Length: 133
Image (cartoon, rainbow, N blue to C red; front, side, top):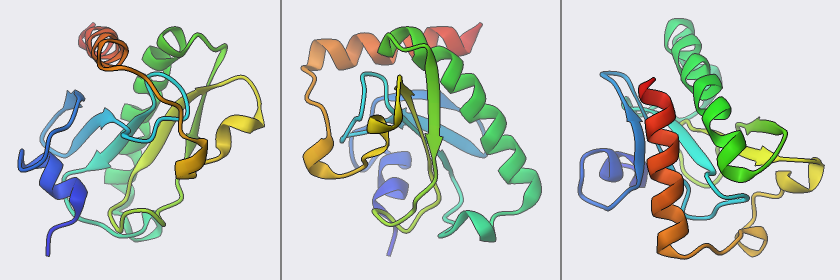
């Protein structure tokens, strides 16, 4: 059975995409820790980051770094953080989000911030535009 991320990648479920190439996609999280919180996900279903081919991991990391540069001004933070947990969905993903301190590292549903569609659409557009440069 396809993961929820595969269903988003394949267009079966909606997603606010900011990046796509032949191996990796990036889309906004539905439980953002900050505005612009983005998930960088391999198209291939890989459960754990430790099972990822080193070349693909390097590519995921490079995309996550670019996304992090784009996320900082959208989130209004001086830093971009990354986190690989893998408990929510059994499909490797790197969380990239703006953070000013360790409080942003709470990836629980109750800690998620609420943003309206206009804010999310703006974040998506700004991050995607930054990644096109």
